[in-house]
Image (cartoon, rainbow, N blue to C red):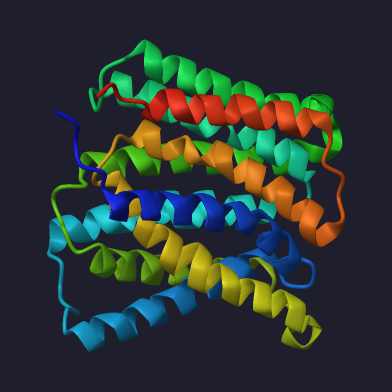
Length: 296
């Protein structure tokens, strides 16, 4: 007997894959004239305001209790402050190719963590799915592997390493507690609010002489896009999916993000798509298929 296709889940995964594939370009544009921590704080602040209005309209704004409060604070710090924040900082100083290679480690960490903490059982299907996806990303950017040893990038690599580890940890924590609260929108409001406050404080501490007059409209619009689509829409879909399927199956989307990011580079920035991209895309999609394939 075949299981019924969950169209909402499929749509959520498609939205996450497409939207987060565009955020690499969005962040790059935002930090052209805006300081990274101001980008992240404004992004999460706008997101919190949007979710606040939605909750008021639906009459669902409420206190979540101290236990869930602590969980959402932890997730805000891990996923939004450290992972999202440090990735934004890193993208100002290291090549996008290197960023993509290192970000591809995240699903590997999530797979290992899921097995170690008993969130899911180790399977050959999961192992080979992750392996194919990781190989595809490294194949695209193999010429950038030497950048890891470049001393000019050591600070950016350090920030990105913290971001990747924080993201993987946050995903595992979220999956572990995913069935404790069904109101994703309310949880996101608390997460976005916590993150915006923390990141705004960091922004004023790190950039005390920042001048808003120097921010371009291009960067401001990119930050707004990141808030509306990269935060509100994509995070809602991500948590929706995380409640229904394994953390590893959701994390494999980061490989799809790479394909979309490169395609947008070709479409918007006139970057060249080579035969390497075609081969790598085939490897990545094979990995996604292996992870998600089920016999009827």
